[in-house]
Image (cartoon, rainbow, N blue to C red; front, side, top):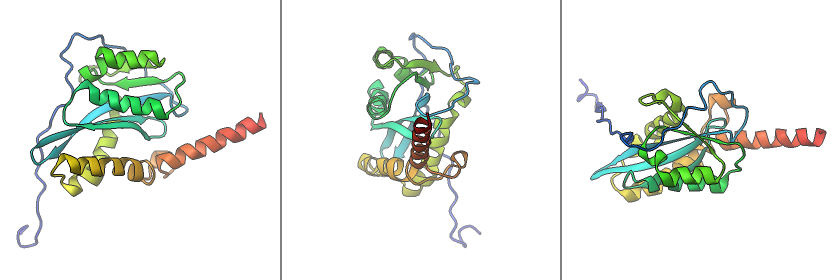
Length: 208
């Protein structure tokens, strides 16, 4: 019946793990459990996902501001090297104001390696990590990755690394951050929501 109607089933794809927590690096406590977040640049969540291409996988490291849901840093690479996570972090630090910020991640080696930790500490960023095997602590990043794959990756079926490099930045910057509506933000995209926050803050300063 499906053949007669021209319907194709989507095959469930094999899960690829991007977290290697088998290491001796220091693990930090979870600082965001039950934490009330009242503004942007208070908590960033970092995570890594994979994107399938014809001859293998490409990896995307992303950092999301929990309050505004904006992707504030990202990097694309062919390996799960810590350099991938560091590139995403460097982008976020270069474009955002940092003051009493918490950086939350899993216990993967990319986020516990000495180079990554040094960047966080040098910038006065507090370090928070999920419990082992507890993805719910990083649900905001997981939600973004789900959106990315359903609304972009699965529709285009990338074949090469160049395809990923061309499409993913466009989706993150032009679609997700600037156009995609979030019910939690009053049905506004992240960048518009942050602009409204900035205007409200300016009005409060004028009143003061």
